[in-house]
Amino acid sequence: MWKLVVFLVLFATGATLVAACTLRWIASTNEYFWFALLGGFVLCGAASGWVIMSVRCPHCGLKLSLFTLKTSSADQVVTQLLSLTTCPRCNYDPAFQPGPC
Ligand SMILES: [Zn+2]
Image (cartoon, rainbow, N blue to C red; front, side, top):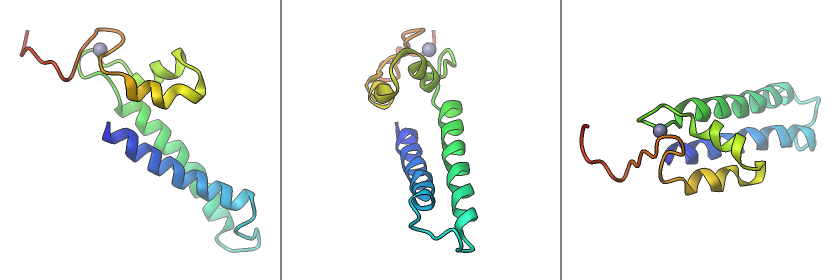
């Protein structure tokens, strides 16, 4: 689940940059304004794309973050994702490995 932590940190950084621009903590006349705004958006987008592509079931390849996104409401996605212990599709349990079958 370290990937989720990295994602949250990246996403928070990106969101903070966007917020800094929209809330005018950084003046729009500042030469770094557009850089920060675009950088924030790119960081959020890249973090989302990366977490969707990388958090998947090692057994059947189900994209767990996309699956959680579809099956639970937006405010519960992260908690839902963290509470997953087995794959919702194939029931693969990373903590329980009986060996190659
Ligand atoms: Zn699976």
